[in-house]
Length: 353
Image 1 (tube, rainbow, N blue to C red):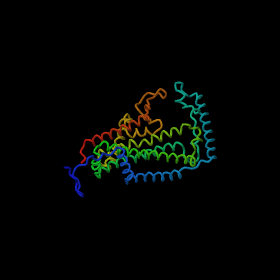
Image 2 (cartoon, rainbow, N blue to C red):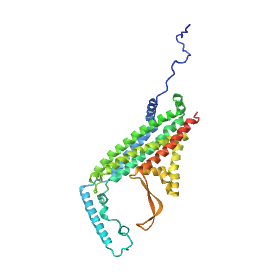
Image 3 (cartoon, one colour):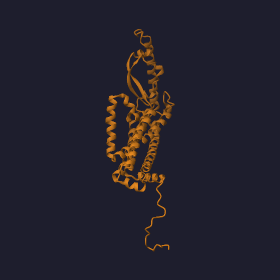
Image 4 (cartoon, rainbow, N blue to C red):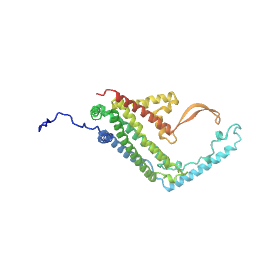
């Protein structure tokens, strides 16, 4: 005989089909909503906007508009200076006191004809120039990268402090899958913000060059490679949020505390790396701070190596070593990968109850 459930009485038999586990896409969407609604995230965005407005007011008040008259005076002064340098160089070449065993470059220096001076060096007002455009591009990238470090640390650190991570595992017991969803949401939001920051700065820099400086198209000598180099620098600056966010997330997941994470990062960068660099310059390519500088600078980071004999100067001089952009990026990713993978491995194995 088939039993019939009585009206108003709940059946104690299990459901025929268990509730399905959330898909990865649903996990990411939930994490995105939670990240955007976090108070600390909104505070960091507000700090970024406030910093931009303060910086814009500072730049607008610091630099002066370059008039055609000021540009003409600077050009005339530059031409006179170049002519004088060439005359001094020609006199040096015929100097009878120059030793016979001394090369021309070591006694007279390089030929001024191959080193044209830039007009902006002789302008009698304070213009916003292309080099400052590049320098502030690095500043924007570093600033957004630090915000990414803080956000990555607090994003998982708050989960440990509030014990929400334990509750999450009842909904999604696959720990690595849960962390992957959190990292995907975190990196996705930060990359969007980093690109947006660089776009806003690009527009701002173009306006400053047009109103408070010398447009790149009017540079003397010309700089046809400037915009290509600036674009590459902005891409590298935007991608800088990836290793910093992963480091913040991974360290906070290891130590289960946001404040401890930021303290460890500060002590390591300002204390340990500074000490190691002073003890052994060969450790420069293995340091996070040096890798970040090499990642940003055009052409990478130049640093001194061992003393080697230089035939031109006939003396021992430090060897010029180059830490390239690619090497810097790989070192940054290595730091981030070691910390993140290590924290995920421990999270998968240890008790979190």
